[in-house]
Image (spheres, rainbow, N blue to C red):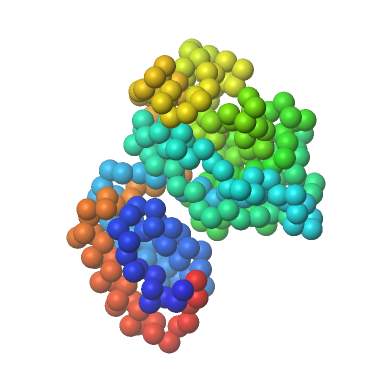
Length: 267
């Protein structure tokens, strides 16, 4: 896709932000153009209340590119979205990418996890506000379903969440680990809380059990919501009805396009 198609606007939060993120990554060699795009986008975004977390899912494969974890790209997205809707946060997954390294298909210590997440070239997205999520075969010999840095970017998810309970799955693990990245620690106050540890937490079997419905599992408190919303990983986005803001972006991009007509940008 060339630059002139960048803002063929489909008025949905996900599509707008995805285009922004991809362009931000591709335009690092054009600082002036990138600065204009970023400034305009966030000017529009901060005028509205909706928020989004964009996740880069990364399938860890062997050295030859085979035996990839979560190759089907499952994320229990309906459950994850409903849980984080309590905080008016939408979770949006970018297309699944792959990281080929047999030594990281299974990890057995926090040292392995830190090395996976913090070493450049392990599939991380170029944009710092995109949450990186690695899918692995196994964590701690199958005893752990997920890991997440507290107040920092990086989540690891084991394939066992998809086979748990004869395939019913641990449908809240991804939402729980995202919570850690948003600076939410464990709580033992109630088994209905999202941030209760896995040994205590009641797991939803479908969206009908998630708060405020059914038995009300995966609850977030007002304090947890406030903490989560303050994370730099939570990005405000314009509502679909924000035609004025979108028009402002579109008009600016027309001007920028004319200024850079001789620049070939592929997407």
